[in-house]
Length: 342
Image (tube, rainbow, N blue to C red; front, side, top):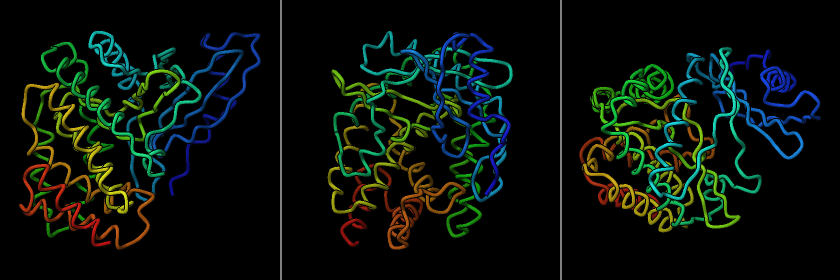
């Protein structure tokens, strides 16, 4: 496994915040690591009644395979946060993103902390607690952002660079999966060309349950996180990315399959109602590639440990790529068939 860059330690994160005026010089700050998955150093720095999350990207991601990526992607993330903030403020959709507090030339950003009692939606889903209202809300958010930015030339120019998306998504998910699955490699390569060739709206690029925190302190409010691969591109990538995680969990936790499938429907219906285009077929095609990628790509889903579950996901994905499903109801039927067989 790739070693993380040791230079940006917890103490370095606190010093960075003091040096750039985020933490007052006389404040007694504490710091803890938030893990950061495979792509970033992430720390929470807390003082008095305030806190920020500090992120510095890794130049080579912490996975078994070699996975380099440009560290300037953190500035792309800051720009996307600001765009989401603006859209959500005008949309009336109940959702939040953490605001940017500091952005510096050494590729570090400090962002607002979400409420301390907010819970990661992924954790709830893995525990079998499937809140269909959250699924609807995140569909509303994505639809609002896609619809609002689709005709915005300034957003298009800001996010025209697709290099982070290629480095962090297309290469490790699509190309790696094609190499490991030669029987469907041609279909995956066709999807690569389609995704990279589509330019329609601001794409989040990592729109998944792990990047949704749910605040239930009042009216349920999702907080949307992690925008480092945001780019101008194919809206079907985002819809497929979220649906993929819901359908994977519907097979993994197959005893509760119906609840996850219902959440997938609610997410899709909310999204579809907010936009004026039909991307269902494109979503299904990308969904198949992403499902296979989370088994055989560079970043497999960590909780799918049983080979029987992995094989079930492979069958759903490959049958779809071979033409057994072209719409979401057909894909859902394939997933249901595999879940019931486990």
